[in-house]
Image 1 (cartoon, protein in one colour):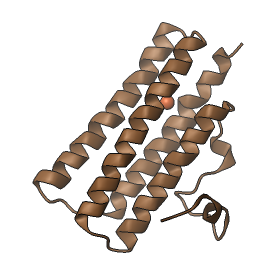
Image 2 (cartoon, helix red, strand yellow; image 1 turned 120 degrees about the vertical axis):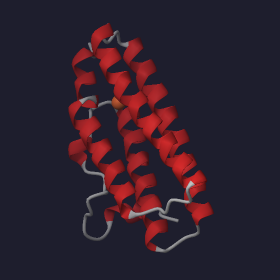
Image 3 (cartoon, helix red, strand yellow; image 1 turned 30 degrees about the vertical axis):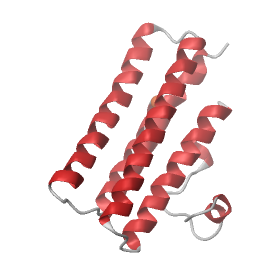
Length: 143
Ligand SMILES: [Fe+2]
C-alpha cells in the first residue's frame, strides 16, 4: 500500500502528481491528487503481479471515488454558476470516462481480460488531459 509521503520521494514518474495540474481550487486539487495516488497504487498491484480479484476490487474502488469526485466537482460548478454550455460540455467528459471504466470492469469480469500497464497509461492520460484542458477552465467562473 502506498502512503502519501512516498510520492514525494524518488524520481518522478509519468503517473505522479505535478503541481502544474493544480486548478487553484483546493477541494478539487485534493481529490485530483487522491486520484493520481489511486492510479499509482493500481500500477503497483500490476507490477507486483497481484491477483485478478485484488486488481478488479481496487478498480471498482477507483471508479467509485472517481464518480464521487465528479459529483463534487459538478456540484461546485453549479454553486458558482458555470454557464450551461460549459457545464454540459464538462459533464459529458465525466460521463464518457465513467462509461469507459464500467466497460473495462465488465471486460475484466466476463472475458477475464488481464490488467496491463496500458490501463494505467490510459487513466493517467485521461486525467492529465481533462484536468489541464477542462478542469482548469472552472477557475474563470469563480468570482
Ligand atoms: Fe472535471
